[in-house]
Amino acid sequence: MGMIMVGTWWHAGFHLTTAIVGPTLLTLPYAFRGLGWVLGFICLTVMGVVTFYSYYLMSLVLDHCEKAGRRHIRFRELAADVLGSGWMFYFVIFIQTAINTGISIGAILLAGECIQIMYSNLSPDGSLKLYHFIAMATVVMILLSQFPTFHSLRHINLCSLFLSLAYTFLVVGACIYAGTSKNAPSRDYSLEASESSRLFSAFTSISIIAAIFGIGILPEIQATVAPPATGKMVKGLIMCYSVIFLTFYSAAVSGYWVFGNKSNSMILKSLMPDEGPSLAPVWVLGLAIAFVLLQLFAIGLIYSQVAYEIMEKKSADVKQGIFSKRNLIPRIILRSLYVIFCGFFAAMLPFFGDVSAVVGAIGFIPLDFVLPMLLYNMTFKPRRSSFAYWINNSIIIVFTIVGLLGAFSSVRKLVLDAKEFKIFSDDVVD
Image (cartoon, rainbow, N blue to C red):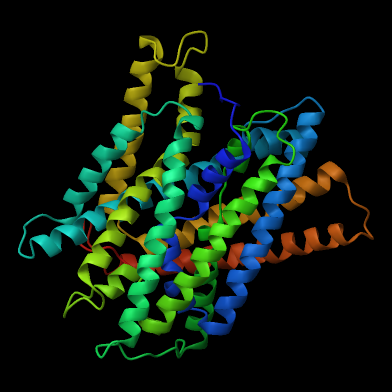
């Protein structure tokens, strides 16, 4: 169905915040364990600065095209227009599909794990397995997937913003409590002994941080803003990155401070070990898990929108209403099948940390760290002697190399973990 362009800058801020600030921020201590304190801080800060700059440049390119009478509502169309290459259109479709499907699978997987954690605390001897809870999460996602447009998610994404702040502060409080209690775990911040293992772990961690900062759907978000969009996305980005500053650093520092190189891919799992009592009050952790669960559904919704738009471009009749029988029935069928597909893969291959790294390296790094710089250079053609020209090309070169190395190390770790894994396992693999 067509994009509804009536949103304000704060609606864009809600969408941006939901797209970036999600439960994946609770994997930051896990990313730090492959980098250590100094490199962890440097990578987190550099990624933040580069992505803000990158999204700002893309917003300028979109504004420039709009003023020239070519308002783009899809990333793939913007890339094909500016770069003038037909293959670029399909390249962006492929990368966006990989990102959106990977995040949809991850959201359902993590939602299922949240339900499992609550269930295991209420019924320690219960017979239900992880895939049962993933099926429950999939059913909820099928129902929620029927929101017809991106703009219709604005109120859900406002709630998502508050949920991210709430569970982050609860987890930070829980980490401080755990770190100062008499049962505090022993702390070890050393990296892996082997130099090659340290290198692979570092690039995997960088890929995870890239995935956490990545959006991959900025043009689709800017397309929801009422014209003229000039300047509105910058305000939305400032709102989003204010939330990022509050949440990312506090979660990374508190989690890594307590657990060091024993941090799990989900810090809540570290706070609730399989053996022994919880390291923080159960009600605090339970509330945090409930907030995470609710936000995961919002994240699954926002990242599914591009997939839905691609599917419905052929199936929908734009001459008829969104809720007409002609459009409603195909929408229900196609969206339900897509969510079932994601739920099936989440149950079959629960590699949360590994999937985050692969999506970051293969998806977010080219789309959010490389293409925006290229689009800006092609659109505005800065002089070779200008600072913008050199900084943009430096970012392109550095992150192309980081992306290639990150993709190799991430896929390597996924293959290594797969050797010790059984299909439809009851545990999420770190």
